[in-house]
Length: 99
Image 1 (cartoon, helix red, strand yellow):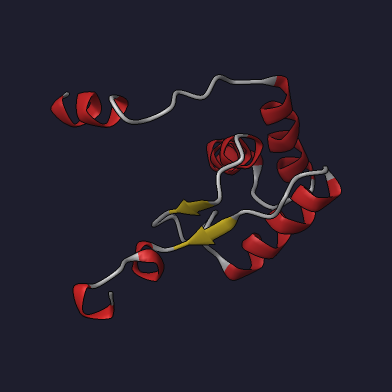
Image 2: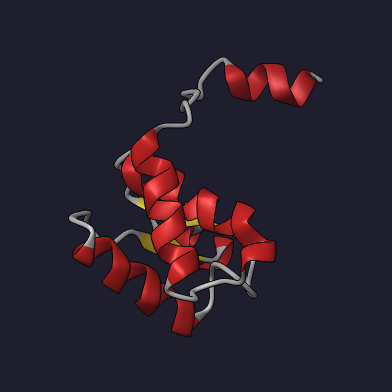
């Protein structure tokens, strides 16, 4: 509960919108992920519709997968959205010696 409270103090709560659900459905209909993984498609749709610059995830099966990233990008462009960066935590971490 403490972690949730700390994060919610600086996080934006994003409502479910029709645009989010339509983009999720576009991912599912195009076969980016199977319908049983609709929550993963919703995650990407939320971030895309909300204008996030990137998703950082450990989900290598349905989100951070080189074939799926290309499909998410293609559908985003087709549906009028920008491609979204999809990366692993290691790809976005900065280390003191690099700064």
